Length: 208
Image (cartoon, rainbow, N blue to C red; front, side, top):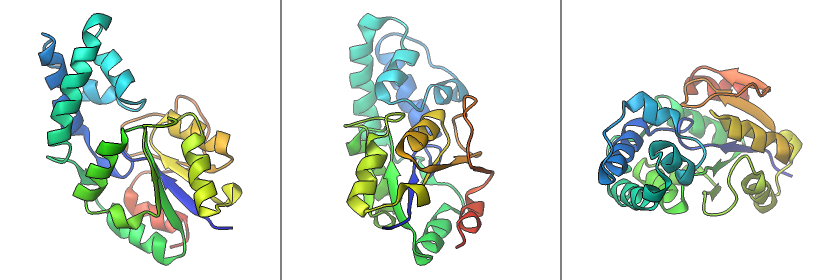
């Protein structure tokens, strides 16, 4: 059986704050709402696009139109400013060289996930990817599917993320959990096995 490191995407692998905020405010503008500060939009991220729109648009009758506007804008602009965090790509390469299998599990819709991984030039670092078109964290379905595909040993594998949904999914899948202190989310009081402050610390944690 193999050891797998399963990474969240937004706030873990990539800094997508500016593009998410731009598309979130475009969605609000499409239904007659004013723009919000970047930090406020970012605080709404982490539970999938439907929850993001719910938080961005208080009036439920406007959410379908806002979601359409968000997705159309984000489709064209998801890689405008989005980049891997500093030190991240080097850490991934060192982890692969050390024998770890790398995977991605994100609540972001599949099409956006693939576009961003390709646009950021990191698609080939991962042997399995799962987006939010199926099970979404904290549901452990993505992680269990990855572990089955890669013949992964859950007890020797890790979920790496910046949000309480990552922690809960990892625990439910039987993995250990590492919390990324540089991300957009929070633990919501959940316990983790390790916390690091910078992507540059990743390789050292896993012996690479």
